[in-house]
Image (tube, rainbow, N blue to C red; front, side):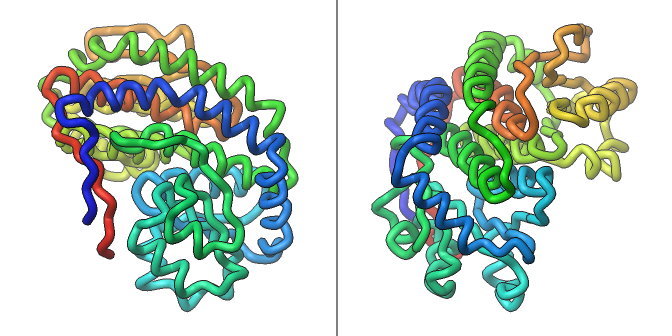
Length: 350
């Protein structure tokens, strides 16, 4: 593995700065995908090589896999069969199905992840469609169709690269399925920016509410499941605390049964199934657990064991972006209190 220091004791400030860059980086990505001739040409080319008769496969690892989930969710929402897989699973167990899927669309912010590099080598030129943040990477050089993430250099763990790659995945899915994303872009940037400011202002109350928990689990549905997975990864990488992510449905089938005092559920009750998240919050509360309820509902009220944190409403599927904000805020507050020894590592082994 290759390691890059994020500035020693300055990693927490680096992390905060990169979080705060997200709205501007997101706006820049929307502008480029709307009007940059090179990007528009690449988007047009994708439409000619992605079959309409086969399900569209997305591949990624870590944060990039989370972004791929958002892309697949958008295609499904627009009526196109699509799914995301971890690149390592597909590489070692599923390559025999490659002629039964369209793509795959590769998401790799670094362009150097071991699995993605190997996949690029085994795919023919037709199949090398890449979303990537590094134009100098191995995957970028090996790909035929290359869409930039435009997040800038990132030295702490994935924040703006996740946000921008998830947004690029939504745009690509919309283009493939004939959906319109341009009219939503200003609303998304505004909702994300305001939600980020509010959540970061509330971060110390959030950390205090979670302090002393025996375990913390982040729970979401649909695009917000990607936010849950990314949020848990964010906390673990930056602080070393073992936070886990679940789908809301999966959480009901087992993990809910052991909720008790000492358990904190961060429930991302966003999007068209927000009411199911709110109901799950009530069930966790009734078992004695504490709940951070991430909601667009301005009427949600606080109690001793329920802490609502409001995010601005965003059209579906953009909750895949806004859902990660509260876990990012918790990560920052934890790192400010207990410190962080995070060193950015590039995984070079499968």
